[in-house]
Image 1 (tube, rainbow, N blue to C red):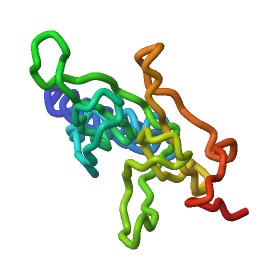
Image 2: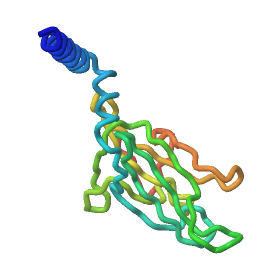
Image 3: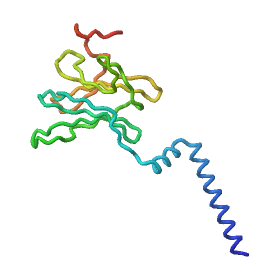
Image 4: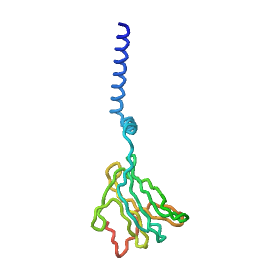
Length: 167
């Protein structure tokens, strides 16, 4: 009889503990996300690709827009100058929370390469939404002096005759 009471007590205690953990995880967002991270396998998803001479060296590079662990990144792949093998040249974490699309040359896209300032050098155009669902256009330019990609403020890009910027 004592064994049945002990087993019944342990079963009730385990049930109450499990119920308490479930309630806390439902009510507290950071704990809920922690459990989700443990239970759900993190996938790496390629959202879009674009190719062009963004390093300004005559060689094509490939830009990938990646979603990984609910964060967005750009990865730039190109030929290594020493070995001529394709390798990862840079990874840029995006400050946007959600993917977005824009119309570029009549086509809806979420990643584009274009010379938007008329300097004959391609920039990377990446739309996205922040946590308040406010749309943003991220523009990145390769700086060959520093050998890095820099974020450009799209409002400070000079308008050219061919490209009028609407205000």
